[in-house]
Image 1 (cartoon, rainbow, N blue to C red):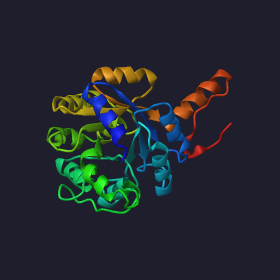
Image 2: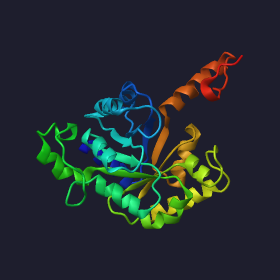
Image 3: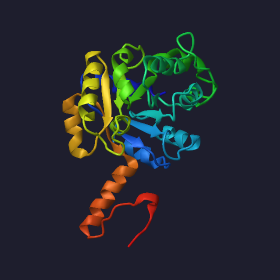
Image 4: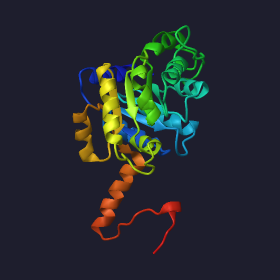
Length: 267
């Protein structure tokens, strides 16, 4: 657990600064090394979608060690075993998808903390220096760990005020695409009325003294989102940023085209 990076991350949010990061979906730890070298404030290693396995995840975590970049792992679901394993591997915190209720959020916090505050089991793994810094780690881990829920459904909007009362949660992330799908606009980033509903949720979170995050839709959207009150700002997904650059280069030589469903190649 990277205490100095976590302190810097929290300190920036506390004084109203933006913290910029990258959503990591590719297996190469070089992606996270680049993010660290460029001084990004955080990375989220995505184990919900895609093909990253535990070996890939720990390689990304190792790439962030001794840096000032917070390394979070987005898990496939709210699950005690998954949370324990990600934290045992040395993640600074977990990102939990599809959180819709106060009870779910309280369970996420409990799963992320050692007893008596929670129910996280103690293991002699990477987070504890394979047992050699067990006392030091367990003494500080409950205060250090970051638990970041993603609010991405209409139901979550109805529960948002209750969720902001949960201790141990400082930042709420928003997923516009899934929120749009749950509102009946599948395939849209922000369907009709969705932007306004997310803004309203963000206002509730900020009023409670907590911060909000979202992945920007593009470079110009970063400043817009910050002005709206979002502080934890994703520059994009690693694959998406690569594609954006490739499209620009291909367009410059008249060769640009879209990727087709099923990755079909058609002339």
